[in-house]
Image (cartoon, rainbow, N blue to C red; front, side):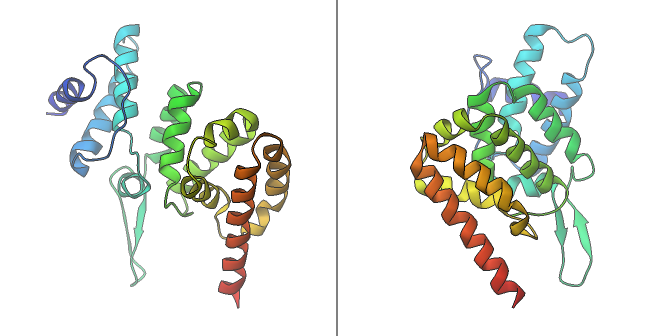
Length: 213
C-alpha cells in the first residue's frame, strides 16, 4: 500500500522530476505514510542517482510546508489535564528533519523557502519544533548576507513572522547576543529586514516580561 502511495504521488507531483510547492492538502495519514515510504527508499544502498534525485524531490514536496502540519506530524500535544499525546512521527522526528537538511541545505532556494514558510505563525516548543528552530538559526548564521538578500523578497508580515520564530523561546533574552550580531550584519545588506528583526525581538522581550509579572 505504501509503495502504491509513493508511485501515485510521483505521478501527481513530479511529472518532470522537479520540486514544487506542497500545500499540505493531502490527508495527514497519506502524508505520514508517504514520508515513511520515501525515507525508506532514500536509505537504500543500491538506489540509482536518477531515482535518488527523484525521491529526494518527492521528499521535498511531501515534507510539511506549514507549521501546523509540521506539528501535526512531528509534534506533541499537551492536554490541560496534564496528559499528552505524541503525533505520528514524534519519536523519529529528528531523523526526518535531519534527512531534509542533509538533502537540501546546499540548495539555498529550496531549503530556505521551506524554512521560511514553516516559520509563518510558528512558536517555540520542545523536541521537533526546537530542532526546526535550531536548523533555521544555524542556516542564517552560516550565510547572513545571502540569506538576508533572499529574505528581502518577502513582505513585511512574512519577515516579521520569521524573526519572531527565530528568537522565540522560554527565555528570549538569551538571544540578546545573537540579535546584536545579526542586527549589525543585516543592517549592511538590508535596513528593512533589520528594522523588522528589531521590532520582532523587542515584541518577544516585552511579551515575556509581561508574562512574568
